[in-house]
Amino acid sequence: MTAERWTRVSGQHRPALGRLLPLGGPRDGAWIAEGAARAVLEDAANGVPGVRLGPPRITLADPDDVGEPVVPRPPGALPPGALRVTADFAAPAAEPLRAAASRLRLALLAAATDTLGLVVTDVDLRVTELLDTTESQATPVEAPRPPAARDVTDPDESRAAAAALSVPGVVRLTGSLGGLGRAVHIEEHAGDTALPRRHVRVELAAGAGHRTVEVALRVREAVRDALDDRPTVAVLVTSVA
Image 1 (cartoon, helix red, strand yellow):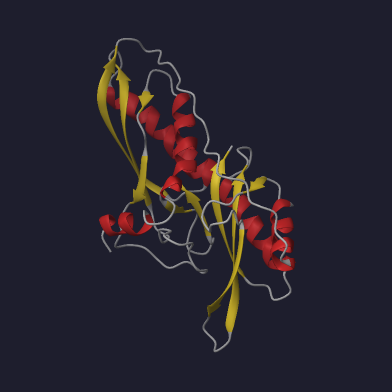
Image 2 (cartoon, rainbow, N blue to C red; image 1 turned 120 degrees about the vertical axis):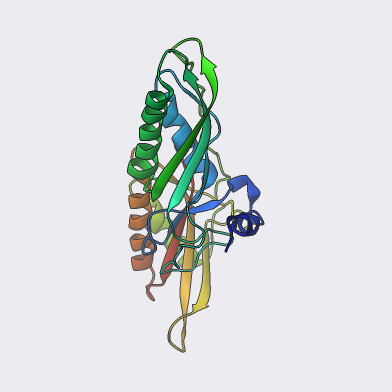
């Protein structure tokens, strides 16, 4: 499938979230909103002296080289695959451009992989402006504030929500994707056997002091263990702050 088609398909669902990017690999069952990931990258760029980053864009590195996750994807989410970060930036005129790009590339790659857990294989940068000074003014980065999830009354949804909130690194549950402010979605999916199996999707905001993919993995385990039938679980991170 072409990159343009992935963009068109994912853009049909909650455009305010941006693309829903695979977080980790095919077995991790987690996704993150591009807006949330972009804020983390921009914050990392603010720590690189002398450069000024334009809005970064995160896409599949090779749309023809993707896999299917072990759990159903959220609506419009990209499949697991290597990612590419692209961005324009302003560099100091007094420094070799290659050196400035290298410093920025390392910072973005560390934020994407070490802080979030994205599988980023390419960081493509383009210099669009030269700065007269080596000191660039940091641009304040505001993390996305997705709407808080409404209270739930369904017993299984309540158990799943409580389990997710008990995981260190979960700031709150959010309700952006599924409508009506729901953070927990429980549905049945046909599996490899004749009997359908329940699937749970949990939407949340994660704390910046924890590696995001590891928070998602702990949430998956906690929610699965909280329900008697041990359903499959997917996690969607809508904010990191």
